[in-house]
Length: 149
Image: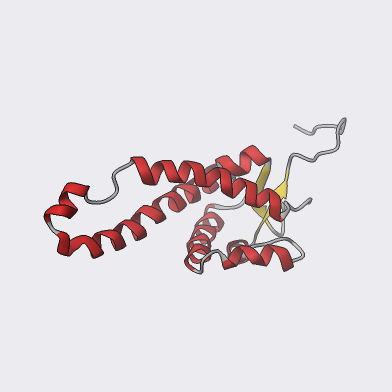
């Protein structure tokens, strides 16, 4: 298996963050501005609710994509894929769920879990370690190699 590099994973995360931003900005996930102005005492709790719910929804949607396709739009664009670390086969739904929980944890510690990629021989981040997955480069196959479709 050819493991995805830190920069490939960073590019994929950047692409994913674009559609995450669209979800957070354009889908109403909390009270409207009028509601906040009508009850300013609830402003603090509204912001906390938006941060928790609004920021978790894109990650949960990503987890569903991992379970269904083994990748996300950003990873697909960069031509990398998530697989089981031991077998190299598609990850299971359980692994996708564990990886999603790990992703929430990684973001909860301000992205520090991504730094593990720099020091781990399999280039695993915290969420990969929790789910026993690796991210592989599927775009660097040798040209002219026989396909086993």
